[in-house]
Length: 145
Image (cartoon, rainbow, N blue to C red; front, side, top):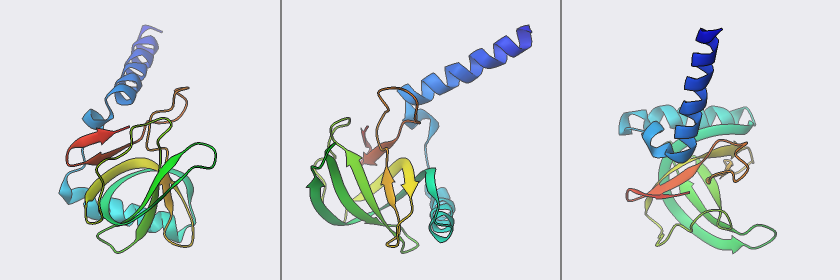
């Protein structure tokens, strides 16, 4: 019984640490870029939804904010593999990525949703209710969550 209690405490402590400090738990060295691109390619091929992913890409287009309901900053990134993704970053719950320009490198952690153009990444912020894994965006070493 004590062993089970200790394991439970360690799991909860790890989750709380991940929610509060996701960058400590999710450093993605450049060598892992191909692996994350491959995982995103599989998610696209399988029409996957609700998949927590992490990766990096280059901003190729900045779109107008989506102001319907919760406001979202929107932009398109291209992965090294050539796949494109729409990033929909909730700016009612997280800080806007600013400045942001075409050509900027950006890292992301969020939830993948399939669409015919490559997919959408959202949940790039913390869940105020604490029921969803925390996501983030990182540009030039600065976290936006």
